[in-house]
Image (cartoon, rainbow, N blue to C red):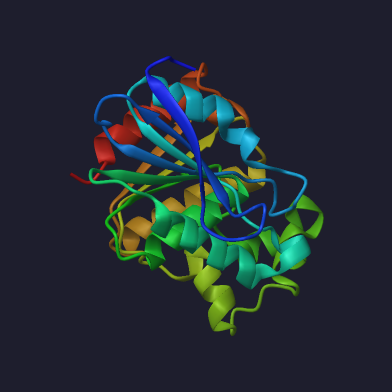
Amino acid sequence: MSTDVTASTVTYGDHADQHIAVRRPSADPRWTAVLIHGGYWRTKYRLDLMDPLADALADTGVAVWNIEYRRPDEHGWAATTADVAAAVAAVDADGPVAVIGHSAGGQLALRVAADTDRPVLAVSLAGVIDLATADERRMGDGAVENALGHRFDPDSPDDVASSPRHRLPLGVPQVIACGTDDDPNLIDISADYAQAAAAAGDEVATVTAPGDHFAIIDPSDRLWAATLAAIERALPL
């Protein structure tokens, strides 16, 4: 990490997972990135998945808030949703903010961006942003059912609120990115979502380029470089 970056931890609750790893540049940040890791909403995956991206962004003068949260396999879906909302509310930023989620974190990013009152850019990196399709196709060994505690129910207001595809328009600008070498299910979900969001009236930029599921969070990969360029073009001023 650059010597011009200060690292700290911000807590937003009493549980060990209710914390945010913050990286602040010494000068005023160009913008603020809120990172939300994936891992199919399972506890064994943690915020360190996003550390390389967080370091790289901080070294370019971006303030980075890499959030941890209680996962639903141990704490229930309501706890996860509440934690992400509380973490985003705890972010101290005056300028543009992008909420960036990878994989399952893409779902969390788009939901919290739609729920929050602060102006943000919502970014999905190979996101599981259609819970009905992910559940129907049993992606991640039934990850949606495991997270929600039941199969996706289109008649459940909370299930619909949790699935970005089912609550369009979100009313916030979005970047939807997915590598062409990723899981075909995620490629399908991202493409369908972007088309539907634009048709619903949302401002949507798409990124597709060679790369797999982890290339998109690899700061040295051209897929991430293309995504970062799209993010910086789309940031609300």
